[in-house]
Structure formats: C-alpha cells, structure tokens
Length: 114
Image (cartoon, rainbow, N blue to C red):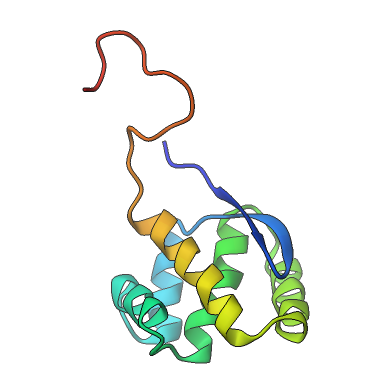
C-alpha cells in the first residue's frame, strides 16, 4: 500500500500524497496530465499553478485540511522562490506517480520478491 512521503521543504516538514482524487483535481487545475505536469516541473517549463496546485493537493492527500494546506502554501510563497517550490512539487509528483510496491521500509517476508 502506498504511503505519504515526509518532505522537508520551505513550508516546514509535512506528509505529501497525491491519491487518484488529488491527481484528477491536479489535471483539471493544470489542464495537463500528471506526467506532463511533472515533466514541466523537472524541465523548468512549469506554470505557477503547476507548483502551487501540486503542493496544496499533496498536503491534502497527506491528510491536511484544504484550508490549512492553502494557508501553508501561501506562507511558503513568501518564504521561498517559486523555483525552490517547483523542486518540492516535482518530488511530490515523483513519489505519487512512480512508486514501487516492493520499496517499503523493513525486510520482506521470506520467499517474497527478488
């Protein structure tokens, strides 16, 4: 089972996760598929909503209320450059889209995986 990812970023240390609902909301907000948004982020061709929406929705998917997520993102925009926040957004998308079910903490039970 996928779990959120703890990330230390300019807004603090929080759990981020983009579940299917957040991914669909992100696609609507950015008018692009999630992988297209991630590609824009890592190639420095992003729009500001790519950054803000990914972080906000990642916080919500990680368990934060919508209102608190908006407030934290607004504060982070005053503390860090949009470029630094784009790096955070790319990490959130990478974790949510490219996770490996076998990559979990601890040892696998005997006989599983290879």
